[in-house]
Amino acid sequence: MEGTAASDSVGRQGHPRVQLGVELRRLRDLAGISGRELARRVGISQSTLSRIEAGHVVPPLPQVLDWAEAVGAEADSLRALRALTESAHSPEVREWAASLAERVHLQDDVRAFEEDAQVVLNFQPALVPGLLQTADYARRVFDTFDPPYTPEALAAALAARLERQRVLYDPAKRFEFLMTEAALRFRPGPYRVLLAQLDRIISIETLDTVAIGVIPQDIEASTTIPHGFVIYENEDHAVASAEPIPGSMVTRGPELVDAHRRRWAALTRMALSDNDAREFLTELRDEIQRIATQ
Image 1 (tube, rainbow, N blue to C red):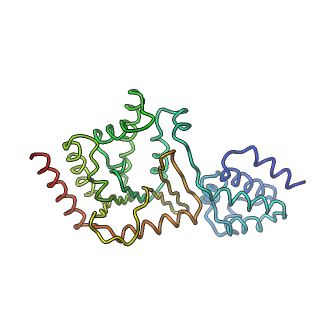
Image 2: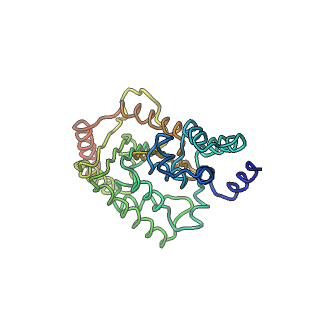
Image 3: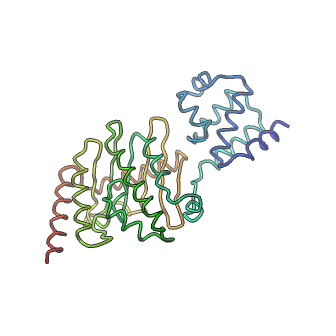
């Protein structure tokens, strides 16, 4: 009977990670255990516990099992928790068309991840990351979207993207950008657009909060180049996101986030950094300048 009630209560919720948080909170309340006490028993911080119950953090299965043991969950509730945890670890795919049917742009979704994170690891193989884009570069990138933006939606998306960039100046955060040479050469307009974009990257790299890595085209490869992805790290959780053609994909499961971290580490080993990256960017900028003036 308790298992049926549990299934009914979570079935009316949204995504499995939210359902999992609701069920874990329900079991804690039934057991009459405070959040502080349960956090101590499970070995996590109280803030992490709150994020789990709110559906913002997806706990690994061993942590869920420790939680279940601490609240004295019965066998049917334990089976429901296992199923919810497995589902919650699957990536969330949000189709562009469905998302844009509700809003004119999706910049605020990305901004929420950036503002929540303490460390952001951003790999882009095809174009300059949004946080580094100039206004002209960003507008021309938005112009390539399918389905296209209306003029009003384009203006709103551009303003929101530029507003996002204020987070780069937050001294409590750290941003690491990793780009391929192909991404740095991507030119969504006249050469002046690319030259201004390279100048901005060179300027932004001087910030204490920002590090730039570059993977040259002729480097000996030690791993393959995947699609772009971003890892948002916090003290008690991490999220990875990517943007395949149909929409955006958000990964909260610890195992899958770790897979993104391993690929980040492999790509970083192929990259130039610090002075080498600065020299590369300057030489590339000079090369583009020569081509533009020929």
